[in-house]
Length: 463
Ligand SMILES: *Cc1c(COP(=O)(O)O)cnc(C)c1O
Image (tube, rainbow, N blue to C red):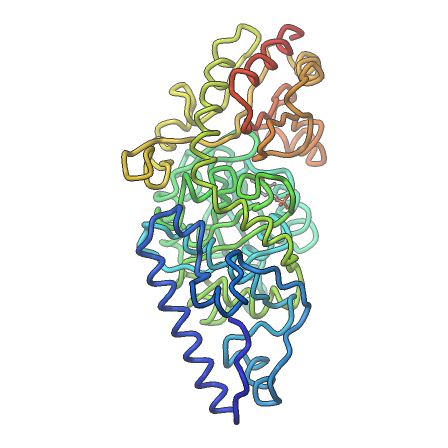
């Protein structure tokens, strides 16, 4: 996707562009035959691309806002989207392109699905870019509706309830128990434009049956959008289960070092939609990138894309190790007398365990060569028998685990969502989203799990 060299005439420029696109498609096809870790490490940054970038073995950070064109033909072809080009970093950029291509390959890994990705400046920008195109006027004047799994990230709850429902008049229909597939189906009708759910959800770790809810969406001719931030493509690839669009807060487990905020929308080619042009259905992520994304401007910094790409390379190994640590921590909490309940899909006692154990598998298995292994991620929630005062005392007693509204980090982090991430949605909103006031959200990082457990044990003495 770098600029073509000294072409003559518009036709020559377009012919050269077609060659570049074909070469890239060959590289994509070649990488689809590789294992998850190999794709994560190389993406489509081939040996040829490496040589074309002065031999830089790591994808270079193209910080230039704009691309220089060989001549006016090249300029015209690029801005008319007739050739692969990047033009201007708000629309596209080579570093962003390497990141997007890697994400698209990982998200569709071993699914047989063809997908494209668009990287965004944050996870919230990704949620908005994924949902908003389906809320367009359809010429009937009827109010559009969306059906949304209520246990979700606080920012997403606010986006749907404040920005879409209150400001734009969208009818937002909440599914209180997303595991109840019939509840989704009951809320879908002729006005429905999309179904949206988190798998698993932040912070209550609620799950839903993606294949069953995707069937409900497809019966209605609308897409299912899944926020799979908590799972990451190393543990769950919703496109392979029937979902149409996946969104990520890349800021979390994908960019676990905590050096960048970023997001991404990854969509299968050929989705159903009741509104929008054919291009939207054919390749949603590309359509979003070329038009709504260009016009709204939630671009990701190329520097942040490189930070995220650097972490993405080791995603599978990290999610494997940290999920195993989280499992030990969850078992410790479950057995603790001061703890009322632990929400972690890996626990047999968890309401979502059966569906999670069916759908959440470490890519390429435990040994990297196929022995199947369930893994359930870094995030859990737990409530205390003695209510919120005890939750505050426990949070304040942590000495190793950091207190922050963050998750998916290499460092273990805890918060009380009711007074932080889910404060603004109020008591009623928290009841809908299943966020009790005594809930502590815990994200287990890369420390030795025994040290995390010791820290929790000491803090829980204050419960
Ligand atoms: C954090 C988060 C978001 C929002 O992502 P940002 O990168 O903070 O904008 C969306 N969904 C989930 C599940 C999250 O945890």
